[in-house]
Image 1 (cartoon, rainbow, N blue to C red):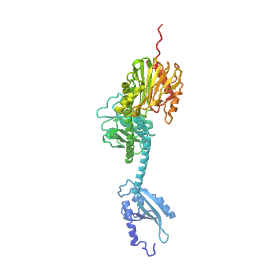
Image 2: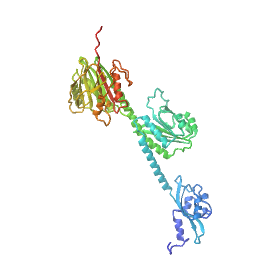
Image 3: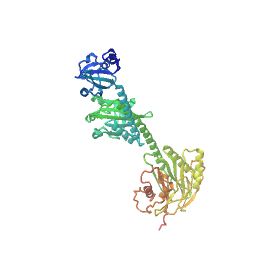
Image 4: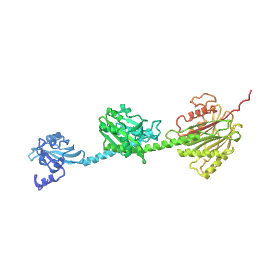
Length: 581
């Protein structure tokens, strides 16, 4: 203080105390108000004069002030910072107000203790901003977790379960995911008029409800929701439905059916939250969450987090639903096409096998065919259309149809490939394909092969030895490279089996193709007629032991889910019947 400054108690000091926005007070040694400035009176919602001689708890009983802190200041004279929160008698837009300030011991010029001085500033706005930032950070962490954990597969059920598990970790005591029924309801009768039917795809429960979670419904069950209940309302409006602390009547109207209410009450469930699942303008279903016991009711922040998670998960669910639909179409199309290979010549016995890749992959364009030709010959074909999915399966059918037309009257395989390639060049094709053609002649014990970029055939001897046949590969069909193909002759001794296959049987990611083919050539299969230890499927009519041979090859080379589809075709000459005695 400058020597010529205003003296304590002067009008200047009075103006300073009464003009500031900080709340200022002087508490006596008994911690009763001796002075408050107008700013503090406004904070408290009590007139200045009404403070005199009263304690803080008398003026603002809803504020958590620790008087012990003031006693410590009086005792040792050391100033201290303080924080407090609560509500005063003054109106406020904040659900809870917050203050920060300091307190110090006040003495007169003679050193006599007059009391404790307080200076307070309201920081409610800063606290709200800080809490909002923290909530935003937590929400981002949850969404990051959702991005990592939801949609790890392209399958509906696992994706729904991932969502339910995450919701139980961060938001609810139990969570259920219900998807709209597709109409294929496993023989169930259609729902009554006005009832919305969904299928429960996932259920997850925390410790408080785990023992009784079965009462909420098992995954796979159908859920019929009564008209006007919460789930149909959520689907109709596309907005979350909050069901906090409902009465029995309210819960009866909101539950899927009135029969659920006794279970909810016995389990201690008191609040619910239902959020829609929708993506790309289409409804998928809902997510239902409940809280029980000592868990609080759902608030606006819970709704925001649940909605964000549902929006994120809905995209993954829609992708899974689209994939499931396309995968199903592709599988059925490919199975239908491969289920009816042409009939070989009666003197040639054949067996085929098709193994789709893992469930997470779209089926490919692998195909095979056999066709009886004039002169006792049989056409053997193995092909692989590039790509996966419905497009590859449809293109596969084009190649197969074109082969049957182009096979002609027993032309050499290279001529057939050139003819098909010219037709493809004239008509256009979206996906090139590899193809291996063989003409099998059981009467002469010979076979002729030509390859359009396909892996070489193999020959399996009666003693189980496997050898690869040298068939130079030409360019793939439909690659617009000008078909230059060559037919090569291969002896086909009695009892030997021709084996055609697609690359999924031998190729492995990151491995050189020569190494992959050497694995096939290195096989030593059980001799003809030896019992199978690989669980071979029963031979089909006229198939002899060819089915067993294919089962052994698959067991040795692709015992688990292959990285790509696998198609195999085996052919063996049928011995001539011996002379009658």
